[in-house]
Image: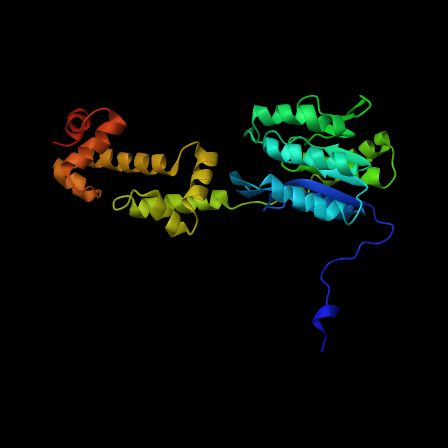
Length: 331
């Protein structure tokens, strides 16, 4: 029988492996954040240790929600690592509040790692703001002066070193793709920890990211398939149910995810799609049948003619009778 003490699931650090600490948020999809940093560092022969600053609820459609860890918890994570081992380099990513910036800065000043590489995560690749102006100011005042390398995103994609030199990255054609900025900064930190100079580390990191473009953030969701399933369910149930949660339950997803899918594909919320589909069906019935307004109301699941009229007028600006007089096709 194998004793419990003899079993180890953690890979052991080899003597020649540089130790790199990543301080950033968590991305459950593995495309960015601490999960992606660990992959990059490991792929390049480093040994990754990590501190999580924020937990994100996200999928292939984007971030749904954040939980920012308290600064005291972040501090204790850093101290637990730095008191015990000595990373050759520290890579910093997502910092979302002033308290976190202050505690990370204080501990970096205390432990003096040889290299600090910072990848400012200000917005998502879809332009969603991830930090306030107050946090940006705190980073500029306190964290940036400690950094040896900072990646700068945008049209003038460059890497800036502490001595003020800028290194353009003309080959990084996918610089705005999800996770590539983090991969670049993690690679720079690893190459620096392996003993390369700044210029060589940056060039090698750039080359590595370009080789990895096809493999970074390539997780594909089922949004298109789900959207088509949603429309199929809507065709079957529009006359009896207008509730978004009903359709989400039918599809076995959250209402939040369904909303992300429809917003990405059509720019509309599920409720808007449901109401528009129902409205078109109602208009066809009003135009092509002799059913009275009350019958049409009950046919499409309304509890009263008044409720039906309110719904119709809200979407069209006129009541069902007025619409029928204008568009009736049978006498």
